[in-house]
Image 1 (tube, rainbow, N blue to C red):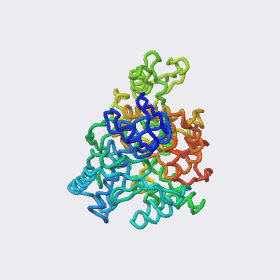
Image 2 (tube, helix red, strand yellow; image 1 turned 90 degrees about the vertical axis):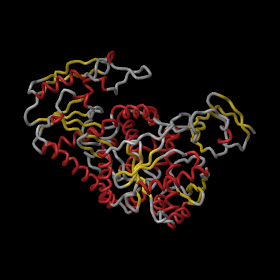
Image 3 (cartoon, rainbow, N blue to C red; image 1 turned 180 degrees about the horizontal axis):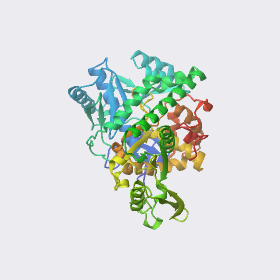
Image 4 (cartoon, rainbow, N blue to C red; image 1 turned 120 degrees about the vertical axis):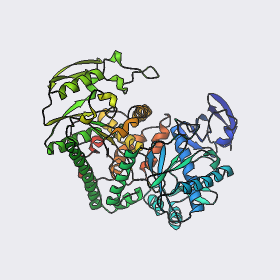
Length: 549
């Protein structure tokens, strides 16, 4: 029996029993192939081909290839740590720029210790040891991990519906990773370890830098915000999904208390931000920015309430009304209108209006007619009194170009994002991007009539816009607000799962929908929806908010 494969628009034929690694061995490709997509399903290279179809090659330049490469590096690090410091434990926390921030149970490592670990990792690379997948009973897996001191992994499996677990084995070590692995240690030969804060970052090639390890740039404000949330998790006594599920399993009383404390922490932070604005005499413009589905709109509304408590009267201004006429909109590299470019806004008019308002003059706000692509008068005239401030929400808020004519002391910049700190276990993290994507899938369906497939299709474009227009300016913020709620994925799961199940394997986005479904399967659902406050961030996505959007 033979199978027909379409690889890079070339047809090849393979016999039954052939692996993907054998099938692609003669393919000319500029980067190491880490895995493939076969009929929109991700397949590890060691797997045997069982069907004909189209093959997409996954290398480090793809997001799936990037994830696979990173898991391979983490397994190398785990092996090196167990070989050299068997009593130590690795904790993988979150991404910082192009790095992945980690800590050790033994405390802050010296750069010398990290160099020793790196040398051991490179030894494994040279040996080109295979990563072997072994499927075992989940209760057996739970006992195996408890025996080697990784109870967090055992807790993760406890509430999964599936009774089988895929364990990866390399040399004499085994571990569990959420997702696919490269064929062997030789595939992940470029990386570095750099001491930062109380831990270190792992850096390795990325889709933007596929041929070499990029230079690491630290983001101290972002790092501080992540660490602040880590302290919140200590208050809540939940640091992994296993611990969250354990709490949910105890019943409604525990869940309700978790929701209340989580929301109280948010409210306290909004109050602190409002207090800080008051202390900074002269602030007249508050700029709120953040990536898609970060909760910017709810944050602006809740901050407004706290400012009113302090005697200020906020006036909201929408940047959407300052778009240039459609024919003046810049175009992207594909010739399409680039509405996310800062130059899609009438910066001159916006700055003229801001200066007039700060000088005590009255202005008439524009209104953008999206149907005809024209800016028209709104009839809405405003003027700033002594007890009033402007609140401007939009993706460009942190970019000084937006408000170039306004002195910095008059401005207060807030960066909002769902900076997830709770992880699946000590080595499998939950990315901020995944949390935001799931939020957006739910919101787009509920309020915009978009299917999960439509949201998944547009997400890469959204991410490119964030990389260009938001992330480079995040350290410009006066303060960062982490909009993540520790319980939210257990709520979003209820709404997101049926939407993701509607994506079938005829679409390239199927593999991403499948990945997110597997991810959500780790969470027990929270059904006490009535206990979620009407002004909660999560209401912006699931509905029944007290605010109008």
